[in-house]
Each structure stands twice: as C-alpha cells, then as structure tokens.
Length: 120
Image 1 (cartoon, rainbow, N blue to C red):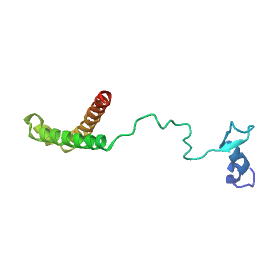
Image 2: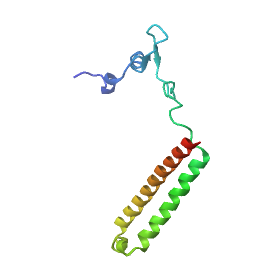
Image 3: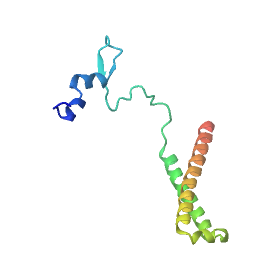
Image 4: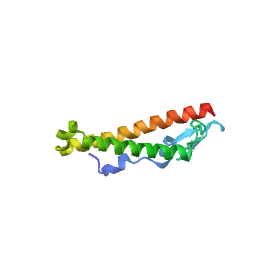
C-alpha cells in the first residue's frame, strides 16, 4: 500500500480537463474551443411561427372552460359517485381531467389557427 492519500490519484490536471471539455472549431486549424452554455447558433429560430396573444389567450380560456365543464360533470353525474368517496382515486381522476382538458384545448387551438391561417 502507498502512503499517498486516496484523493490524490483521482484528481485530473487542469490541462487534461480543458482538453476533454473542448470541441473542434472548424474556422481554425484544429484548435479546440471550450463548450459554452447558450450556444444555439445551430438551432433554426424560424422552425415554428410565433404564437400570437389571441392564440395563447384562446388556449387558456378554452382549457379552463373545458376543465370547469369536466369537473362539473364529474361531480354531478351519478356514474362517478363511487369514485368521489375514494380520495386518491378522485384526485387522480381530477388531475387526469385537467390534463385531458388542456390537451384538447391545445389540439383545438392548433387546428383553428391552422384553418384560419390557410384562409387568410
């Protein structure tokens, strides 16, 4: 056994770490450039059209309206009365209704937006 502390063997020298944490820069002759956070030069910013305020507003209004309707039906319909007595199951169903309502709102908003853009 050696007399060196155990942590000494696992330390990486700075120049080795800098070599591992770099990528080649094609504009230079093979000299590496360190990775940078926020380097989104390769991402196409025109991939998706920007959403207008009315699209976002219609998504939230439609999602909230569908959620209120689904919660009202969940509480008032006699089919679901057995589920309301079980706390965990009723919570899971309510959470599922919330998610499904906003997914349907997203689909409807997207379809209406596409139809509107094709006409105009």
